[in-house]
Image (cartoon, rainbow, N blue to C red; front, top):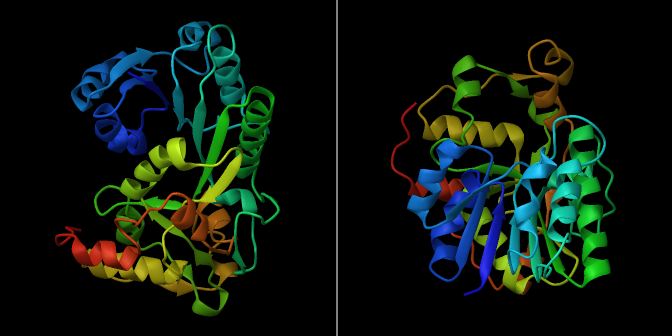
Length: 293
């Protein structure tokens, strides 16, 4: 039986483990021994290792036919040493993986002034956080060119679901959003859809190819918050000019409010031959049970 190694067994990866486990032998890497039981319950074989501790990675070499790389870069620096250590471990000895799927971010495009864009758009990250993702993408693509491993990169926007990944806390705090005339376009993908796309990328993704893993929604950020507020029976957030938000919001939140782009997703539909479970945020919220505030 072919083996799939999952690196970064967080929420998105856990959503696809049962699907993969019905078809492959799944090895799920985790840093915490206390997570092993829950991974076994999903159908995976836990593997305790840490990308920040190279000595724990020796077992990865020659272990898997396919690698699903969901681990984020560290919170500091301009590179992604975790991806570097992972690739070094995979090449230490034994056979190389045939395919790697990596979950990146649409932040690699930077601010595009609300323009429509596809995967050919030049990468111009506006934050160190997105810059680390650009570094990871480049390292993975270099690995693919050198070894012949088929690398697919999924650029994910804001990930949501109708339970834990909605901005209820911000709505309850009454955090403001931008006035309509200054608002930015934002993009979304349901966590279930992202999980499925990450698995499809292993088998249908083209070599060294990037994919916008986004749904069909076309919304400004304030409209998204209004939609969630209505679904949760909460007051809609106040709207303020950008100049008045500086002292009210965190630097990270402000950075998200400084990037505007609209992403085309034709490539995932055409090459993955996929129909999204939740094509828009509005459709997902309408189809979910009433959401308690």
